[in-house]
Length: 508
Ligand SMILES: NC(=O)c1ccc[n+]([C@@H]2O[C@H](COP(=O)([O-])OP(=O)(O)OC[C@H]3O[C@@H](n4cnc5c(N)ncnc54)[C@H](O)[C@@H]3O)[C@@H](O)[C@H]2O)c1
Ligand SMILES: O=P(O)(O)OC[C@@H](O)[C@@H](O)[C@H](O)[C@H](O)CO
Image (cartoon, rainbow, N blue to C red; front, side, top):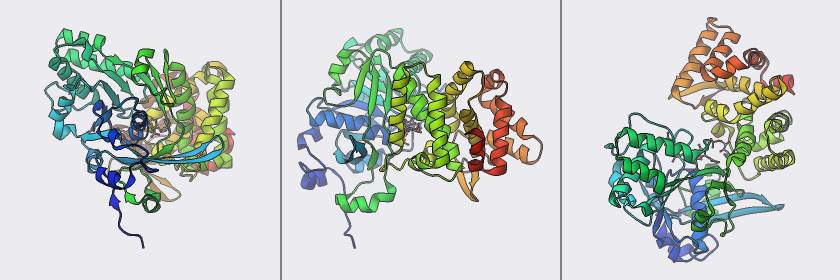
């Protein structure tokens, strides 16, 4: 029987692990001053940016830590603080044909703050001249304008609202000093994340009637950078926890897992690259003039492959991405979607795209990464819009016919969102006689529920149901692609009658 283990924290680290395999560094890096404020405490940032800062610190290239603010009322900063910001990151995969299993305690987070109970503490960070960087990942929903935000809110609800209030506090504290602007590095997967965040911050500053000089300071003294992130981060390894605790010798409620591959493309000038010397530390960070080609390639191929296959694989009874790659029918669907329908629509060098896609398929096949389709399916309607619809439209523009697999994947998405009941804000679907729960914005789920209720009462035909959903979510495409509704309805009818696996034959 295993003995109860102690929880990871600073005291435990210093007494038992420092200088050893899991903590190959000296105590000095645990006390570096705070230099970054991070909005977001999720798995991704902890497995990506915070890991990178830790690598910089180990090489004495940055000598700074990250104070983390949780962007919404529910979150995990309390859990982070219980462990003094420490957590284990496990990165696994194959590199140059060798199996790699890297385990390390990440030390870059100094503390976590909950803005809903510690807003003054968050603002205090704005008074610290050493904190010159903002990092964020608040999901694709995070960089959004909220008309209800007010400058007097403690804190404003939205992330851009919190950032505007934070920057205004800094501006006031340093009396508009142009040398006290921040470098802002959003990691959200929306197009031109830095430009969009800046746009919303400027809009709020104007609406809140903040002085014009502040608005000028925002533009001139601050750098809102556009960035593109890439690493598959799969979070807390619940299934393996008992074994990992035995191997590591402690418990860790903040443990995180991901793949070895990482890429951060940042649109910014070389001088900023000197201040944040990720590249010098050997990390795959590229400072570029234009990040657009990198973003298009990654979002259309990698995320596009995920989003166009998610409903097909899940409804076929496959839970993990890796298993779909190996499945004869679903694997073929995924590959044909990428190589025959996505790549031909991209105006980038073809052999380079094919290499990128082949590498993506290898990453999907990582034997150590259990990437769940159910996680990927979160908010699939907006993901389909950003990650798949552009390929579908471009294909039609070029070929004047709809791409079979992209069209089929839309029908599969409608089948995934087939349900007539909402429970706990989730749409209830059925797979092989068992319930599953679709997570998306509630009004969207309610729309699907209403359509399928009417369809079941024979108030709508399937064609009318499909046309209604297309008009609600993609009104422009519904008009511009004349056969989209009928082709989606054709596939959907077949999926509902014969099941997804048999239907796949219709688009092979
Ligand atoms: N996990 C990955 O492999 C990966 C890779 C690249 C990019 N991403 C991006 O990272 C995002 C988060 O992924 P994660 O794996 O860290 O998930 P997570 O659930 O661990 O963290 C989500 C974070 O977003 C915040 N958040 C959620 N809804 C918000 C809202 N409406 N406004 C403001 N903040 C909000 C949460 O507080 C939390 O900090 C995803 O949307 C994805 O686009 C993830
Ligand atoms: O993280 P999401 O939910 O936005 O999207 C699911 C996956 O496509 C995504 O996490 C990728 O694995 C990631 O973008 C790889 O860099």
